[in-house]
Length: 296
Image (tube, rainbow, N blue to C red):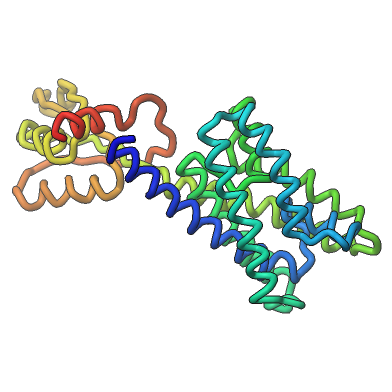
């Protein structure tokens, strides 16, 4: 394994570990004490634990995740499967650690709605950073990813659908108030919305359209400094019918800031329009990676 792949692997392991720490804290401190059954494997584990008290929640979570991991490996892909195996394996020990050293007997917030809000925000953040490295926390995320792969539906919608089905299992808990099930269903829906918003913000790019007489200077900066590709169009103005060149480029938010700084620092007169792009298909980073390999 070369240095680039090793660094990438280490970076992804750190990201996955951090994500699971946040996710485990959300489950232990907000989901379990409030007895909320949000659409997740953790929620399903709570139902099973209620029906079979002898089985700890950490053990139930491990067993259910193991079954789903086998499905993930065959239906989604080995990379996703291996990464999710790692996150699932570390979640159960993390949960057991919290159960032993940070026991929580009752709701911290003393209100199921506040518990719901805190859990959903933390869970959405966890799912977003895990999906960004082609991993998941296991359980519900695996089910959602399978649905997403074969239906191409929005990942947030897939999470909501699979989560709602799990939520309904809460009716198996004896004397469980229907109000708690309704809260769980609302939480599942909000989780899907939060996941979509987090994912959109993290994955969005800027599409900039720039018209300037000094297009060659800007083109050289984008290609040589930012290592990005750029498309050039010959255009004609509708007012004075002047022939100009328009540059179109896709950039990350930080790269777009650098372009604006370059234009300002070099006193380049330009007409610029920019908008957010949330989905990109094709070889987005192909040109950048090729140039980096040539330089190394």
